[in-house]
Amino acid sequence: MRILCLGDSIMQYNDCSTYPCTGWVQELPRFFVRGTEFLNFARNGRSTKSFLSEGRFKNVLEFCRPGDFALIQFGHNDEKSQDPTRFTSPEEGGEFRRNLEFFAVNLLAKKCFPILLSPMARRKFVDSFGSHDEEAKKIISEIRRAQEAGVSSEKDSEKLEHLREKLHELWRRAGEMRSVESTHGDYPKAVIETAKVVGVPAIDMTNLTEVFLEEIGEEKSRHLFMNFGPLEYVNFPEGKDDNSHLRPDGAFEFSRIAAMEIARLGETWADYAPLSAAIVGKAEATQDGAEIDDEYVVFGKTSN
Image 1 (cartoon, rainbow, N blue to C red):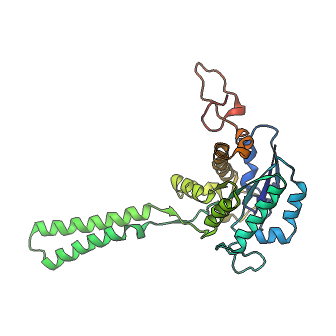
Image 2: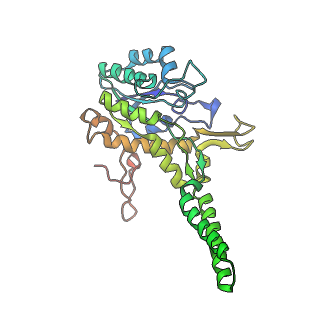
Image 3: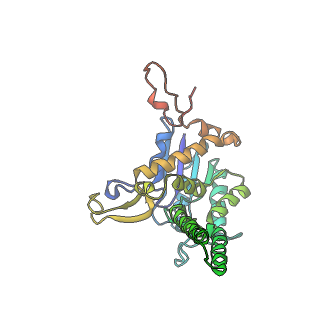
């Protein structure tokens, strides 16, 4: 089985010169049975537009064979409105959708089965103050009414202090409850809707990775990205502050998420059943110290 990968720097293969930067599909073979071949055509800085204009998609078509599968993920560079050589619009009828459709239709004509993936989330956390505005307004109104009524007793004073503490606690919690900001605009939606038009599977990696990052939190997610101090890596002696590109741990986690979704495709897409079946299953821990077959350790389910 062969899997072709079309995308940008978030997906591309990185060698030792850019370590620890790791394209997420570099970790994906860990989740597939032995013998699965990956052909990575993804390249740094490419959008759907430049991938076509540079002849890279033509190269993909020359390599693909009947029975191959293709992972297609763009968006990060299509968003760059200041660069006419890469920017594409995600609106209905826009170039982004047309390019994705062109990729999918031409691959299908070669009997290569594509999957469209929305772009990976960026690690951009924001506070949740806005989501607490209504509750805050109610407390502030109560404080104002209490002040207007006047503080004539110890009970009034305690009530006013309680309201102030309640408001302070609300803002404190809002500051701690930080969420991942959706930075890709309408591009994820365009990916999902284009897949429906063409009749191929789509995986909403934007939403899935946003949820994952929120679950592990702002601090713990830092080590997944190219975000580190000076002298930690020989290739980047001055450090990096990059919340888009991944380190090996991030590539592994995002590959795991994608693999779990690929494993489900065969349930509704018959042509993709062989791809789903190639995902490694995970054996349950056995009793009495028996060894686990490490070729099948991934998801927590027994593979027959």
